Length: 149
Image (tube, rainbow, N blue to C red; front, side):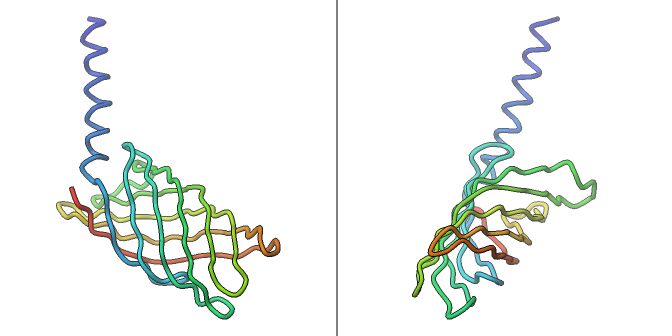
């Protein structure tokens, strides 16, 4: 009886891990502040690394690069569709007249259309820039990614 319980737990852990691996790596576009390319790599059933290479139109404009570690909460929204909330922690680099280095705290919602290799997302990320001076800002974007399995 105890062995069957352990086997069931192992099967559940492996199947949730396989679900994440099925999503694999995705690349797409995001529009907002910043606007550009976005990539996402699933590292477990609930965690992913998200990166962006984009243009920010704030001030005189600058190249924006960010990387975030994300936690996903797939069971919060009950629906016939797959809506997933997420939150994370990351960093951003702004390359322009005054280079910026900051901390991002992204959060958002993703829609995973069934039977497609796509996700659509809406994200807001408060940013605490540490250089060239300490300032507070926001990033926000809507985007879509295609996942390669």
